Image 1 (spheres, rainbow, N blue to C red):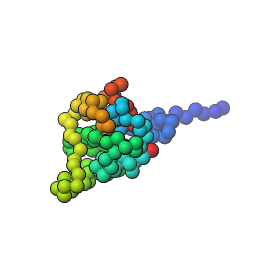
Image 2 (cartoon, rainbow, N blue to C red):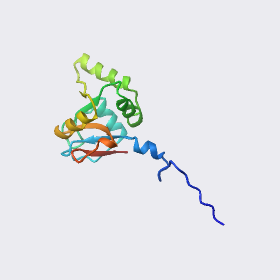
Image 3 (cartoon, rainbow, N blue to C red):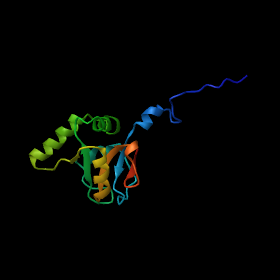
Image 4 (cartoon, rainbow, N blue to C red):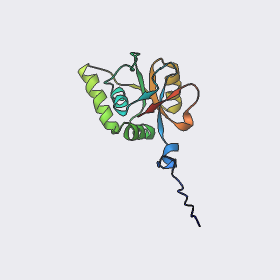
Length: 140
């Protein structure tokens, strides 16, 4: 007799299902032609070291406040850095005059609206905030 074993809480990829549902996703303005970014490129864009999309269009980066839990999760889970490390990189560029910090937004609704209405924009949202006004960018 065969035994059926159910692995509750796991997706087909082996990632906990809850983690997939709670994932913070990379989102872009619909006019962005790039559909996939590597983790390194994404990290460079959010550290404000890379200022253009692979096709040459200017990137406009939007982030939540450093102490917002979604910002912390995005930085740690998707970029593999701590929020304070990003802030140090931004401060260094601003104070040295070599760059600027990303655009800050209050909440995920403002994030979605600003990304949707800003050409070349990139940000992040929890799945529940997604709609047709933004596109999800896959990360390798």
